[in-house]
Image (tube, rainbow, N blue to C red):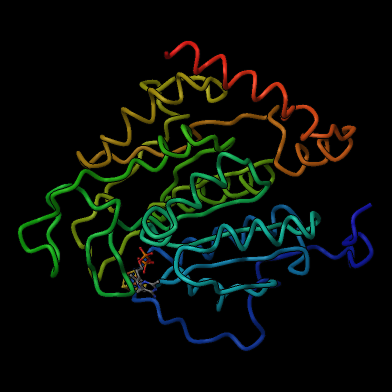
Length: 311
Ligand SMILES: Cc1ncc(C[n+]2csc(CCOP(=O)(O)OP(=O)(O)O)c2C)c(N)n1
Ligand code: SF4
């Protein structure tokens, strides 16, 4: 039994349960993709029947980070790029919490890039939603790690000189056990993918393509998407790492050619989460490291041997 069983009211959870009683006026621009993430996340939580008291939402800094103000669960509006270490820490001290971290592509793939790779590697049991609008929205449209090469902005007048980050390939090579991409223009799929991501035991990464009509009017996110699972052209096994890697390679480039492909790309069910791995370690007998690895006499002998070999 987890501690939340005691507070389960038995009543059906709806999206409204996640709407703050005094709802602040949204400061997102009209047409912003962030509204879709909010709706999909509320919908996913109600599909799963999760009470808001069971959920912690950690957000970063940026327009995306404001998600916390409109989503009524436990929340932490973290500093820039630090959603993942905070979410991890919360999960480690309270395993029953449903932890969701969310932030922009600047937040997650730029300043927080290091945390992204290591949280994926360690397979922490949490969901990570990245609002990928290919720009820094809040600070007025500078290019971000996912802006296409050549993308022009007020601070990159001649266009970006760098190749963009490929978020899904990065997540796969780092070790995430659930990887998907969805789009704000596709609310049904978005909600389904979030349900699966939240249910997944392990680190679930969702690259959520969100449009920024204020600073990135030409973003590919406006183009109608193709769902890779529903397309005959893209038949592949989501549990096969090699096939997933090939699909990602192909479709992450296609995004910049104006073809938006979304869906689940990789699902690994039998990998132990960080929490499970740690529990298994805690149950092992301790072996004294000093005696095992450091025998002073032997170390001197080895040093003399090495010296002999070099003289
Ligand atoms: C340590 C730190 N560096 C820089 C900033 C300034 N800053 C605020 S939001 C932001 C970019 C946000 O872009 P992104 O994460 O893509 O989110 P979006 O606003 O597009 O949702 C930056 C650079 C900051 N708040 N803190
Ligand atoms: S600036 Fe862009 S990302 Fe920020 S609220 Fe407006 S449309 Fe959304």
